[in-house]
Image (spheres, each protein chain N blue to C red):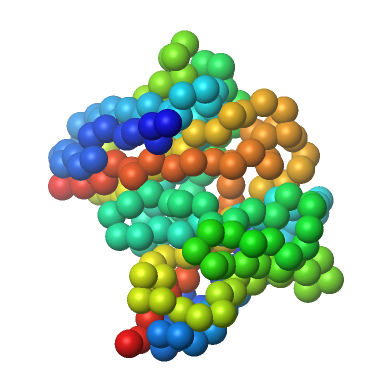
Length: 116
Length: 115
């Protein structure tokens, strides 16, 4: 079974631009979560989608948004990029459902975004 | 609110020596606990998880962890380190309240294996 696929692997953008990252979950997984990883802040939860609905959101500004499609694929968008948005963005998928806390999250290799 | 503290941002051990990576959690409700490993330029791979069954959890690559409620700890151990164990290790917690809160991660511990 194929793992979580994130595209692209690397991105370079300039301040003020916007960017869209893509995540294809493991087949059969209905939950997709996004995380930001930086050397200073570590791994931080962005948001989670299940059945095309955002169920929870971390403490990030509204410039960070996402969506999920009917095939469970998800996209994350960051508008008006800032230098501090440079990070590794990780997507994770799980089966989802109630009591999701115990569900294992499987991570993709990430998209490394550099904002110049 | 839940939180995770990993003691030691860097841990260095000799090849063949015991590996001990420390993790303490804070959670107002029974937690689910996870250890993930991250190799350079890769995503996170699950090593093991605790979900309220046995307190001693065995994972992949010879790692295990013991859940100690009285100490709010979930330390990761491996009897004999191998060069291939060099990586970043993350402890994470979620809680059993249902809903869709994401994992809360510790800051990570970089494991260095000395030949």
